Image 1 (tube, rainbow, N blue to C red):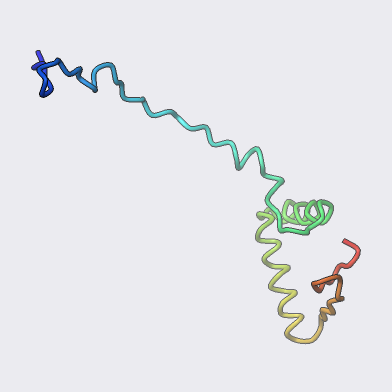
Image 2 (cartoon, rainbow, N blue to C red; image 1 turned 45 degrees about the horizontal axis):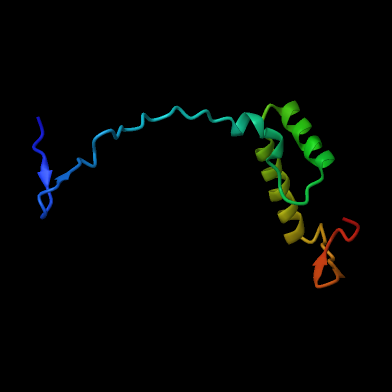
Length: 101
């Protein structure tokens, strides 16, 4: 049995920890990857283009990210070799390649 404590005036001091319980850890259900699969995309990529990339990925049985990586590597190489040009158009306070978006 616990000793009862008293303050300086002799009054009994209640045990502050009595009645406290420790919370049991909760199991976390991770739903993000399954639920938001279609939301993984680059900013400014239209849904239709994203779907085309997913179609190519499915045909070749690889993840869409790998298809995008290959396209990016190919595009950068073409840009460096002068086979592809990028000509930004000034719009308001910035430049863009797609002024209609």
